[in-house]
Length: 243
Image 1 (tube, rainbow, N blue to C red):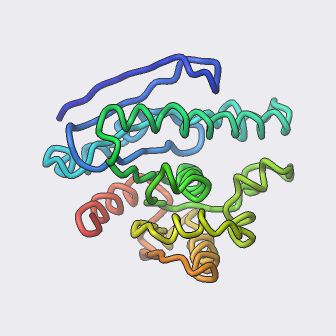
Image 2 (cartoon, rainbow, N blue to C red):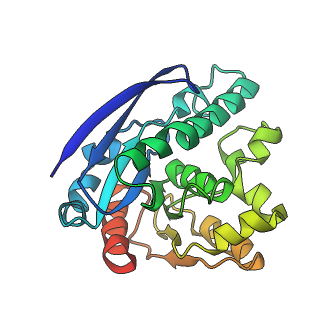
């Protein structure tokens, strides 16, 4: 498998940001880490190995980036307003730096599907719903789509506009809604086992239904817990059957 590590100094984040890519061809799968993890997390926990057949066959080219959750919502020593600002800077980094990098290393027409587990699922969904002109769909595994689950009671405009459970019910921009509706890859997945929150996926699906947005809600069984064995089963299944 072709594996490349790159990095650059991010103007949005004012720091070096690394990115790992796997494969040569196919649609682009943008992996967003869980919680306070980094760009090599999906490799360390063998998820890259689990989807290796799809990478090696040219179905998908994977790009895995860093989160900055340790500099925002996961940093208990940080002022909540500064956490909110930092989160928005990370969005800017993805839209203005990561997306062009992916296009440069694939093609202008290559679709980008955002994918993540746990906190990464929320980020993936948020990135797509805010900019469906740049991100073309999501595979969101074991997500909670209410950002206030992570903000410890803090709420401001940036929290609202980065919390799909809050802003999506009120989204009225016709152009954005039509771009979201045009996606055939809005996949909301959850297990029903320990530490999973299937009702969060159901609630997000209900919001999309009320907006006339196609989605796929897939709730797996009680043996599927909030952990890597679940995600190592979910993602290969979806790459193999939906793409």
